[in-house]
Image (cartoon, rainbow, N blue to C red; front, side, top):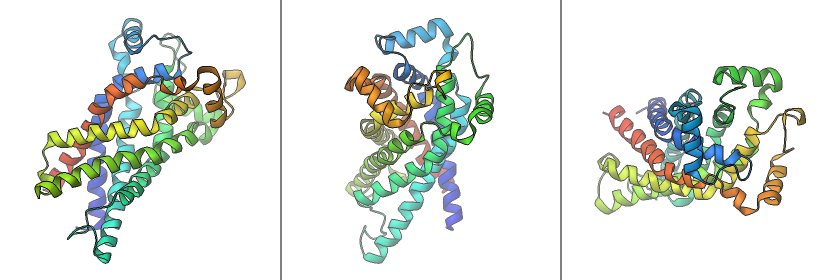
Length: 300
């Protein structure tokens, strides 16, 4: 199989996984973002937040800003898996040359998987930064007096006012999140997959879909327990005003960290964690089973 053909399959299967991730996880995500970014004391918990959204904005509000992530997260996850699989092939070639990684060189070590995962996360951040920025702006804007009419309008207005740098607001926190987070994510998932293949003597495509969902759920928890504080800072930065005249609270990422600690303590870095942990196994299980099943179809 040519490298171009392999990459095309990786990207296509990643897109399938990304679309499933959005469809399954979006309602939980909007609750998480509202809880992360609202003033302290606004919500007593996840149930009150979700109930308020349902009462004041209706059920469709849980899919507010979905077009942006549906297209964008599909692209992001596509890039993630494309970069991951490319790095895995590089390490497989190296392992074969050095006589490690089993007969075919595909059994990668944890450090190799961590490098591959971090590379996938950093490659993904080029797209995920602006995509999540637009999604968060749409999720948190007023329902009665919205500033943006949709993702295209949001992109247009931000570009007009602040240029490319405006779209990449919060990118430092995004990089803090994506590198370590996806290292943990893919190490957990791939080691579990490798363990089952080795224990049962089976091929990757023979692993049951239910096991893929389980391993994806576990990987999701590894991701969030690694990155959640960085995700809170990213959300704060991406909902902050662009200038003092528009309600800017933070002058930099470090300033945001300092002010969260000063005003809310360590608890400020846990806001919105409950809906995230509820969402995680469903969204990440869907992502990985979508990717693996799509790869099986594409590989015939």
